[in-house]
Length: 346
Image 1 (cartoon, rainbow, N blue to C red):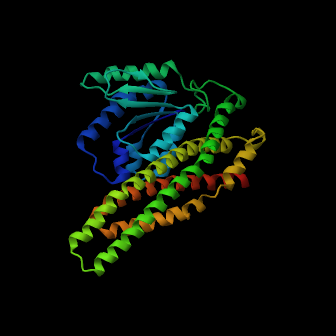
Image 2: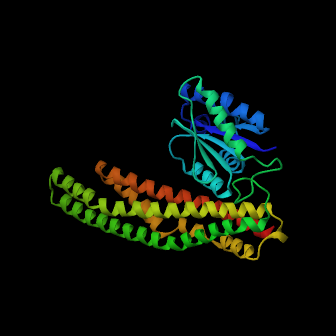
Image 3: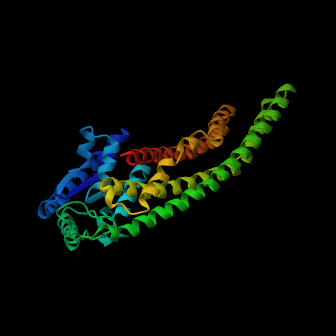
């Protein structure tokens, strides 16, 4: 039976250990019980509530997998979460329906297989919202025998060959993004070199100031000059890291879709290029990125900046955030690498 997953703040706060406000719990109950449940019962969908699963102890990685695989997802989320963004990106690539709950006054289509559904602003509005959701899903009926096929927004029956071009377009785009990562890493290296050089100059000036018995105000002036001087390289590092993470996000979504398709398809039905693409993913060495000179210098730089002065803590936090985002995206790709190696051996 097709599945419908409802995910809202009651799930995300469980994993983040943040408090879930009473207003959020009430909104979740209205969405789940008064809008989505009646529609699922009418259409024969199995209803799953992410908040209940999270509170029952479902690991986050399993919820993310469920978020990717469910036939329909109704999402009432605010803010940005990189792991959820990956999962929603995979849903979009797979052509699976996603309903985003908004505060707008109307229900309207969104790109691809997504839909925007207005949350009712008054008690009687649940009837309207329920009808809008029902009409939208009835207009694009789900297959009763399983998930929507890749590349098919309607879920209509189609053979593997019809779906493959869209999927392999994603792989080609991912390979282009992978090739461009070298330029982003070069930019990170350049920014780190500039920051390291500035830190060395600071050390020399601070040593001179200390030896000459200069007042604290002179030493503080040196620190303030450095704080201003590193703004440029820090911004360049952030920009390069953002480009790196975005390319990794695009590639991760494409590779995840591809590997999921391979895992679900008998090897005899794989197209001619599938083995070669799988081998390329399996041979990618993301451990080298984690151990690169730029990453190691970045960690050292953060410690030096934090110890220099409280005026340096802001740029230190910016550098920390940039490297944290890069390391997170690399870790996600390492998971896919392991999956590709396992598939290759099977």
